[in-house]
Image (cartoon, rainbow over all chains, first blue to last red; front, side):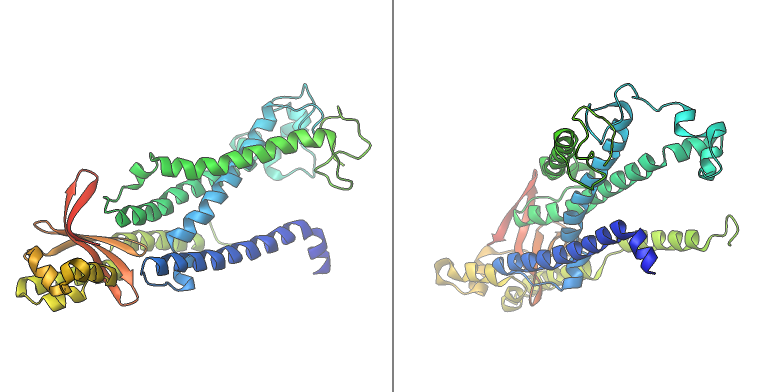
Length: 224
Length: 137
């Protein structure tokens, strides 16, 4: 058990942080929802009803989709694009999907390679893109969920103004949907872009997200 | 190890997906409750029981009706001469707000209040994207 915790401490720490934050968001969101209801003479709703409501759903989904988009794009773009000096990048000249030998697939796989990496057919094609596929599917799934939960909240506001509710198809064409989406995307793109550049010149001793403290600024693809 | 084609998770997921789909299509309690309130409002108007009709309105709407010319809510309602002939046809609920379509016109908007669903606007006719309501706060 102790060994398991030690060997998985990074994932476990983030799981704990995620659970704490998502519960805290629900508590704060529920209080805010009921404050708004009280201001309009509406009925307060229970915590569990809030947790399964579209109001909470859209607040969670709009952030999830942007995070998964960030990682999907990061995985995809770092195949083909490089940043000289960044530990997040491959070395200049290695752009592309690289050779089978470099990727240790097919005949170049070792006895310790995953079984699907040794395959020569469709299974290998799937496995060598599996990270991108799963992250991409998570992005699309959460973005669709944002649309389906967002339209409910959007329509509740429309009813307050005696306007006809819209379908989910109409909602994804509204400025409201895109404002919600893009405000999350821009922050993710800024965070990843600044990380790629700042890690060229700045260091964090002991972090694999940084180059070793003494590594030169133009050393690319080196992790500390 | 379960054989291919008989994975219990697959069957459970299919059942869950079908249940969710059916649940999403079927009218829920909120839809039924909001329709019932509009039905009571329409019945009360048709019967001339304007006290009962006023009971189906939000406090905010009742107050704004009572403020106009110092009339009571039933007196203000009587002046509006709303028809109570239409029957509720379809309710669409969005968390704590709802719109109920009334057969023959005169749709109603509702809010969920501490007393249950109550009408915040009635006698509404769609005009493009918006509704013009004879009774609103």
